[in-house]
Amino acid sequence: MKSSTGKSRIQGEGDYDSARKYDEEAHAFASSGKVEQAARAAAPRNAQERDEMRKAEAEGRAHAKGQPHAAQDAGSPGRPKPAKEAPGKHPQGRNPTPEKLPGR
Image (cartoon, rainbow, N blue to C red; front, side):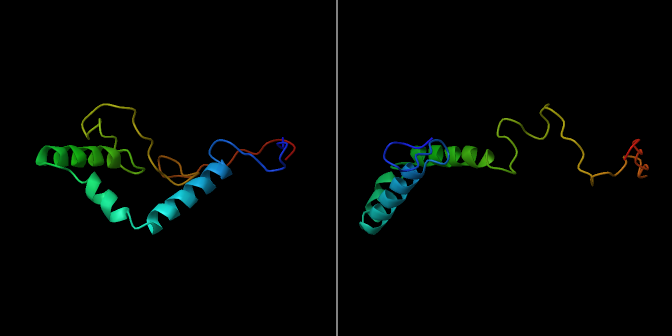
């Protein structure tokens, strides 16, 4: 459905208006010369804050694709992962012949 203005207004992950606005504001901030000042303001003020930031970063990285879940270590129980094998490969190493279906 189109809006009355004639512009496509896709909402959700494909929200073009919000993406364009973010890109424009990010570019304006980067070219404003205030990046160094913002980085200094965001730096940890003491050792405790630095350790908390490092812990939070490690927790976030643990949730990244391909990383194990932070709450589960190698010995914790969980749902077992299926064995990765080539498609059509039989578990005992033999490839069974496919069944022939009637009429095909």
